Image (cartoon, rainbow, N blue to C red):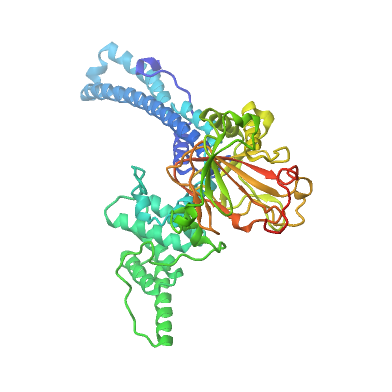
Length: 549
């Protein structure tokens, strides 16, 4: 019977299920189970791109099925319109014809029941099923918050205003990746909920600016002004907080919190003015922007120097130092595997000595390493300086995996190549660590060597003597390795590697080697590194006569 109505039989749940699924898809609802912190790895985020494409295709199939169903219902309604117009004009005359009487009985007994079944059916089964399969891999609230904070981190490090982000204007590129009023509001709300009023002000101001320019939004101006005025108050700008709150009250005079805040702000301001014996000065009419308020200090003493180096500022390279840098062919002290094909070595810095090796990894080797690492990527950890326990930290945002020589001949070959080039044994070195930096991925200034004298991990193989860092991708913007102590910045170049010693020959830590991985502004950064330990190097790098040899 349904085929006569123009649609095949489709089984499914009620319409509310599809509406809920669509809502969850848009909001990334945190009730789903997920692998935490997807945003920390571009490699895993690329999988989400294809997942979303598949879901859009599934959604279009659902829409098409609904349109077919609706077309059948409309066709049936149009046919009945014409029929009832004739039958109601002369009911007795219409029923006088036996065929009309029969068809009325048939319609009411059979065809209306079929139509009822059609209306009650919902062709959403395929879409709901597809959603259920992919839902476990969706980002959660932690991912969304982390991605928002990553944008703010980029904003701070590279001194970008909210307007630049909102309009897709990043250094060296312009894209159609725009932020709406609601996006800016959500960014500000994320900062506000974290008591980060500095960024809350910047993003709420941008939301207000775009709303005042006529952009449509779900969020109201009252809500934006509510968050913005209180955040400005928290930044200590009472005159502007009063001005913003007055704008809020002018729009919604019944807003109870705004009225109370306004009276409190005014009372507080006049109290301060009386104590200082100053006259009232109206709020500045200049729009709030980057630089209006000072960014609060945080735990990192060299924050300004570190971020300046990430922007390519404050570099201490000069002509005298550059004259001491050379390039050469390195044969690993006549290592048989390097005699016929020595590796190109370039000095990056003179003291401490940092070198870069060219053509360290081939494209094929890089792709194999990434292929092996991708399924194992997990949030990178650091060792808690107090407890010694490995844990995640906001100052290290990336995902990493550890690869053994037995995992693939490529890994074994790379390990052997590192030993040949450096002349250091890798038998006691740590496994090859592969890291992928996602949105705003970074590792703030840190030491590679342990500064805990009783660290149990040092008892067997000793401290981290040296670091060998492979760059496995070019980065469009950001992502430099910087050394704040002496003002050096080393930029990623695919296939190259950099090497430095973390310890003096005496075994004492070289505190100049404190370094950082700058946030990735545009692109995806892949690296792999080998931490070489002291044990096994007794005759390869003998002790010096003084503490700083």
